Amino acid sequence: MDNTYGENVHILNHPLITHKISILRDKNTGTNEFRQLVEEIAMLMGFVALADLPMKDVEVDTPIEHTTVKMLAGRKLAIVPILRAGLGMVSGLTALVPSAKIGHIGMYRDESTHEPVEYFCKLPSPIEERTIVVCDPMLATGGSAVDAISQIKRHGGKKIKFICIIAAPEGIKKLSAMHPDIQIYIGNVDRCLNENAYICPGLGDAGDRIFGTK
Image (cartoon, rainbow, N blue to C red; front, side, top):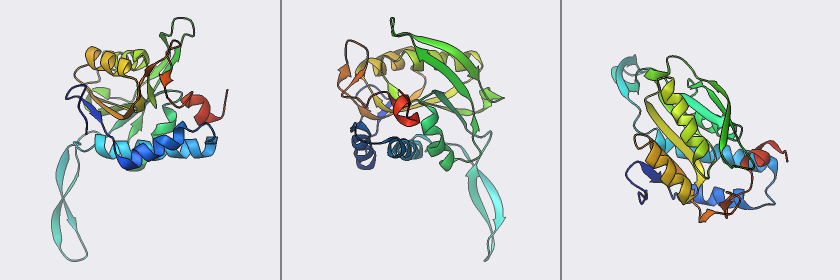
């Protein structure tokens, strides 16, 4: 994994993830395929991001003998998508940890200021005891991610990871500077933001493409 942006930023550059992102970029990729690919990428990224989940010893009886095995320890995972595009990643992550609790943070981008506006926050309790995975397909300016994670911290969240499929350098720098204590996982770093704060080359509006809206 590339850590050009610091030890807390993990750029995965995995061939399977890269291939699937390339299909996402194609404007001719339809809603159903786009949605499925987002789920698959989230699962692949989650496999890496959750490699440090705590384990505990548990005794079980196999068909052969009594033995001690490893299972996940402590409170279960909390997955918190940033609405609405982040919802597209939830199924891929819950496929890995079906017992995960799910929260929601609602943000939209003001079209004139390009700044995030929060309209909803609901988190599973006790949030302070959980590993929290915040997900959003795109990290552009970083504003929504920064504000969402700040909100989670205000509610008591401590161990936080952020997963996105593509990111602009500007967003990575802002998020890692504002929240240096979190782990950031990125599928691909794109070139830049354009004058309208859209990621280039990007993949369009992820929410519209996931849900088939304009």
